[in-house]
Amino acid sequence: MSTDRSPGPGDGTRAVRAGLPEPVKYEPTLPGPVFAAHYHLPGEPTGPYTYGRDTNPTWTLLEDAVSELESPRAPADTVTFASGMAAVSAVLLSQTRAGDAVVLPDDGYQALPLVREQLEAYGVEVRTAPTRGDAQLDVLKGARLLWLETPSNPGLDVCDVRRLVAAAHADGALVAVDNTLATPLGQRPLELGADFAVASGTKGLTGHGDILLGYVTCRNAELAARVRTWRKVVGAIPGPMEAWLAHRSLATIQLRGDRQSANALAVAGALSGRPGISGLRHPGLPGDPAHRIAASQMRRFGCVVSFTLPDRDAAERFLDTLRLVDDATSFGGVRSTAERRGRWGGDNVPEGFIRFSAGCEDTEDLVRDVLRALEVAVPQ
Ligand SMILES: *Cc1c(COP(=O)(O)O)cnc(C)c1O
Image 1 (cartoon, helix red, strand yellow):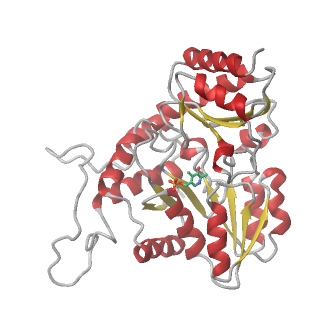
Image 2: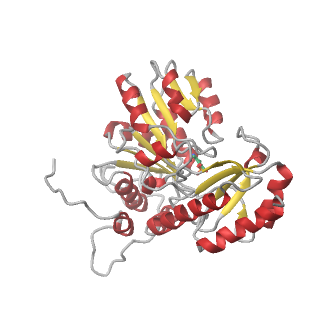
Image 3: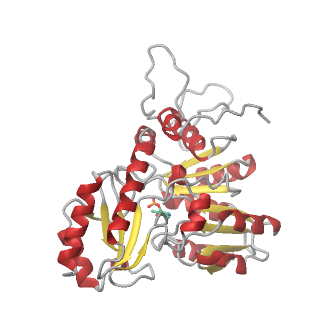
């Protein structure tokens, strides 16, 4: 154990330096993307860089950076992927065998049911329960892996990670947390006891809406090795350009995350109690059902606000009227986005349900735009 009791760098300091190599005279601060299918490799095929599906120096730097953000106080291993779903599937499919049981949330990301089908086809038993109220505890007995998504997308329910981890570990189950919505700046699942922090880097982690990426971080080298082997087997590797862009974007994660969280809270506060708004959720709202647990395990509450307008027409009018908010899926970008989530058909949400992602606009401008659109959508 280290005896150093200094608090360590702040989030912004850590973010701007995360994963950077030691300075070398005349070399760039963040080396550019390495485009290589293979590397010069005479003799025995060992060493860090052999073939481009296994290793790449640009991934190494990004993976070190994500490890620093997800686990600043203990060594961790990160494996990056071509997308969030590649990372999600890598954990679920590499850690389970026929006959195992897996517990998923029934209100998680909309592609999770597709993974469920795959798991079941391979003979894995899948049980589900809601995120809210730590209901997954009730179906945990004898499971091999507990999958949590907190806050859940798009419902923004929160579960008590420490409590679920304690129960799962006591029962011999591994725990993975989908940390996409919170980002490592908002929540560090490994510090809450989870075995895997898994996320889509497509959203708030990189924040510019221009790349797809995923990652898995864990502290246990054996678990990490299985995930790494899985990536080699399925070949779901990130492109070097994407990995480099992601690393470049990480430097501003604190600036973006702070502004987005503040904007989300301001939008939620402005909508609170307005006629035509129901089911308003944001974990940072003091009155939100998830606020108490969120405050005990999150460091920022994220960019997403969800609420329901009276019907589909009102929701569409709202989205059409917004000027500063793009009608688009995904979230976590520097430009605010919103969508009527029901249009996809995958989530159990009302027709007028809106998932709103606050960007980095000036708070007053964003709130004004949202309230103006609400007035048109639902004449007050
Ligand atoms: C978007 C998302 C994913 C999937 O990520 P992709 O990068 O789109 O593959 C997984 N989990 C959550 C919670 C997400 O929001």
